[in-house]
Image (tube, rainbow, N blue to C red):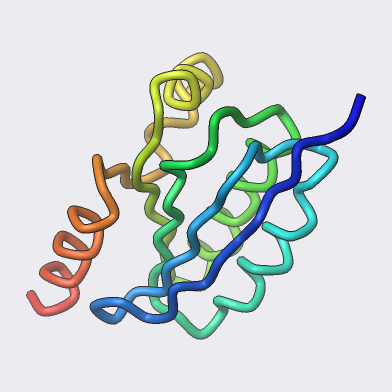
Length: 120
C-alpha cells in the first residue's frame, strides 16, 4: 500500500500568526514533514495549523500535534487549528484532546480571533 503524501505549506506570518497549511493525511508514514515545519515556527508567538485539506489523522499524527502543543505551551506560545473536519474532530473527542487546541471554522476566523487577542 502506497502512503498518500502530506505537504506542509508555510503561508508566512498572517496577522502576526505563523500559518501552516497541511494537505493530505497526517499519519505515521508522513509525520516528519509536519514535525520539521512546526519546529521552524519557534519564533512565532502562535501558530495556526490549517487542517481543511487533512482528511484524517492517525495516532502518530495526533501524537505529533499534542507534542507540538506541549512544547509550545511550555514556552508560553500557542497552537490553533482551523478547518477541522468531522472525522478529525471525532478523533479529538474520542481521545479527549479537543480541549487542548483553540479550534476555528476557517483560517480567516482563526487569524481574526488571534490577531484581536494579541491586540487586546
